[in-house]
Length: 196
Image (tube, rainbow, N blue to C red; front, side):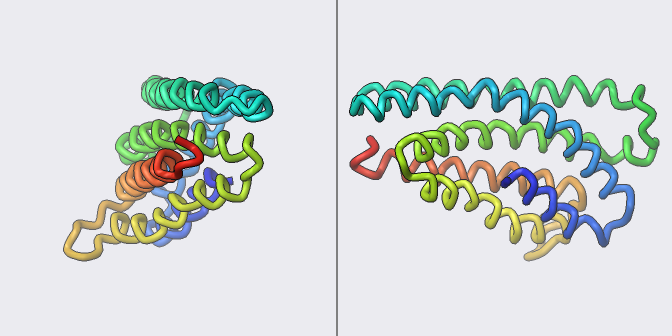
């Protein structure tokens, strides 16, 4: 859900910049959604292992799964970034318009980089879902989406003395919002006594 909301936010702020930034954002989203789907399969089983440990009332096992899960989430995000970078090399051979190819690289790579905090935070979302607190996980996972709204406005349009970065600004805001989101989710997990 949050991935789709990021796309809507980017479309809203990039729309006034014209067809080329929108086309670049759409192409990026079209390819990255395939990678997100594949990588969900890599980190998805974490919820099963947490749920099994939760059902057995094994707090130590939950903690171990979370620790390994965060590493796995980091690995999935890095793999996503690497795959995005590799696909970028193939884009010129996929019949994409030259004007889109001329502007897409920073946004494309930043979108790939945003997979790292996304998949790390997904591990914590799995924890909440698997321990009968799905609303906690949902609310926490929507925080980066909400944070991305002002960040996208600031970086795309150039507010508070910052330069207008346009399409690149949307990528910067996605990475920053993701980092804020994973920091909040990890903090909530580690600083809530019942979780740690």
